[in-house]
Length: 315
Image (cartoon, rainbow, N blue to C red; front, top):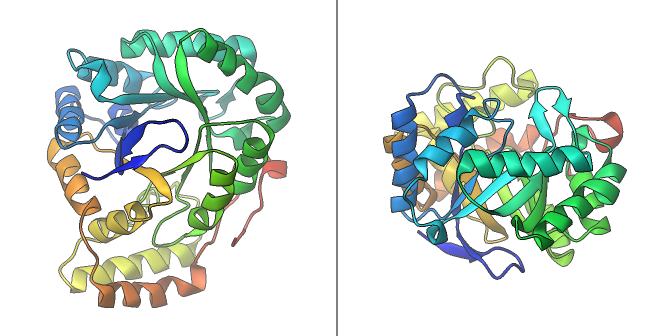
C-alpha cells in the first residue's frame, strides 16, 4: 500500500480507501459476515481510512461497519461519516439534526469520535445554510472532541468550490469526477488545495459504468456515455483485462488525491481492488481508451438543486 498526506491535517492515509456503502446493501443484498470479512481484509492489506454515511442502507452500513470494527485498535484506522442526507429525498442540514446525527453515528459505529465528518451531497441543500449553520455547528462538535476534521461531499464541483472558498474545510470528496470518462476533479484539485482542503476521489468505476456488467438502469449517464463505457469494456476484454482493473488503477494514480474510495462486501473482491489500484496500465490500451472516450470526455449530469449545478460542465 502507498500512503499520502490528507491535506493539512497532519494525517497520512492509504491511497485506496474503503467505501462502506455496499455494507448497507446499496448494490444488492449482502451476507453480513462476508461484509465484515471484506472490511477486515481491507485493513489487513493496509487500507487505513473508511468512509460511511447514515444514508447508506438507511443506517445499515454504519451498523454493520460498527460490528466489523469491534476489537480493532481504534488508532489503526481513520473513520469518516456524514451528516445531512438520510434518504433519497431526505435532507436536513440544520444545526439540531446534524448534532443529533453525529451522536447517532457514534453509537452505531461504537466509537467516541469521528476522525472526519462530512456534509453529505451539499448540492441538495441550501449552500448558505451549510456555510452559515451546518459547518459552524460541526466546528462546535470538533471543539467538544466529537470529531477531529470537517469536510464536504457532492457531485457538482462548483458547489463544492463555493463552500470551500467560504468556510475552511479539511477535505472535499467528489464521486465519478475522476474516472476514465471524466477528469474534471484533477483540474479542480489545485483550487481546493489552495483553499486548504485535501481532495478525495470516489466511485472510480463511475457507479458501475466502468464494469463488465455495465451501468444499472437508474444511472444518470446518457446513451452516448453508456456506449463509450461499453466500448471501453470491449477493448479491455479483447486484451484479456478486466475494465474494473484499468478504471481503478487509472483513478487511484493521481497524487493530487489523498485517497480514492472503493468498496465491496466481498473479501476477495476487496483484495483485487487493492491489487488493481497498485497496478500499471498498458500504455497502448490506455491510448485506445482515450480515443474511445474523447467525444464524451468530462460530460457531467445535473443533480441536486438547479442553482447548485452547471449541467454539461466540461471544466
